[in-house]
Length: 75
Image (tube, rainbow, N blue to C red; front, side):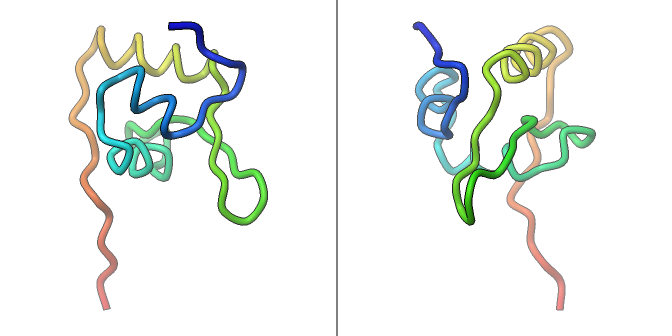
């Protein structure tokens, strides 16, 4: 699969076979906590640099990763 320079959650979902919802959670999680390094474009769009994603993916495959679950807020 040829990946473009910047990836959407849908493209990452198709590449990894993770659900799009899980990808959004990973994109919204701090990379220090296991999330995918991402950046915001405009008010809603999240993108991921292809090279950063591939580094994250290889590290995850090599070291294993417990993916974060949906973040809930406490009131």
